[in-house]
Length: 598
Image 1 (cartoon, one colour):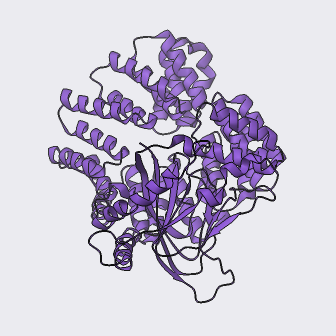
Image 2: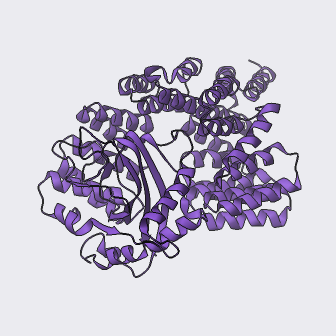
Image 3: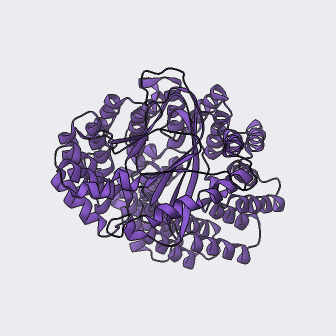
């Protein structure tokens, strides 16, 4: 084939990609790719094609090759940074974005990508400094909108709303700024105002998948469930390659009771995009969350037939096999994933639960203890170490799970300004119920209940402020009783800080799965209101249960149960497995926090 003909095919491929057809673009480019692979623009094009199909490893390889042949193209560095960030390599991605910024100092998209990478890395101070630098160098709405994004990530939602409002005032007709302002309103709890703004934008046109997703979620939270589903049904046709839309539609259908048909739109899209491994992964996850593990397993098996050496697929496959009570097969898949992945720590961490369920507590113990050398306070690792010790009948288990010493109850007196504790709890309950008006949370694993979607620490509300002050004596007493020779006491400090504050409201049949709080130290449950059923089959319905792991091995059931009582605060280690026995009654309203040493 003559060179002009080859170049024409490359141009045709580029045109197909711009029209949203990466599969067609690859089909046109592949026959001539080897003839053009010394051309950096063609290498970059193939990287974009692979990226559009969620084949990120291949995309990274092609972008690196393009840079190797053309060191001065900032666009190539920027696109490589996007892929590295998507793969979780945040440190390298930040360096690559800075290289792109040096080559293209006037390109706002690179600055935006750098800030978003810093946010993903958790480096909020640097992200804020970059955003403010952007405002200083290019005063205008884009910089203020970027700053709002940083502040939202830091859960400074009132600041984020002020920045979003500043951006909107500078360009009041810009749809993206109106959208960002609506998001900021939603985050400070002004959900009705946010929904109204989404509706006004949608009436004109749902022109982005972000608007479609936010609008549908807001409708769902407002209990307009069918309307929310309708928005997503139309949007997955319009934005077929956006996996998040399919995922949320599947979740809504699962909560409506669709079961095995919940992910129908994703399964149809897989037929059109069989090479999209990310879509297959999302479909399996949606089915897994819809409690359809056998169908999720089939989706993963079909995906592994396409991409057998994909660590993420093998990991998901191993987890589902374990849940289907096939832990030894699951362990084999997870070991293969570990051998293939560059993220060795994550791969080792993924082995722990399955090792315990497969009857390999000695290996699980060695692995957990080894991982803790780099992060001694990771609560999940302590929980897995404790479970291994329990299975081995090692006396060291009781040092970690000493319920008498480490689980303590406190009666919280009425804060200043309230005559009685009952009066305070009634006022606090009214405050919390306002935060629970949304429908079942799409992103949470609660059954028959809701959890507040925002961190209530950022909510300047008098009853919540009074509560935080009222529990201080209990927290200090708990800390003062810790021994210095265990993971709890080793972190003892005269100062502490609240890490998070949230509320859970369960209705009849509601429960929480067993879990730990990975980045905590001391966790809690405070009971604000209880309306139990007059009679129940289980006289411990709604009780806090402790000691039973998630996906518990044999003979590892709960070891302690604590009865919920209004006005009582329970404090316990964040690494201690805990959940809630299925509640029977109208309402079980609780407030929880994590604290860490300051």
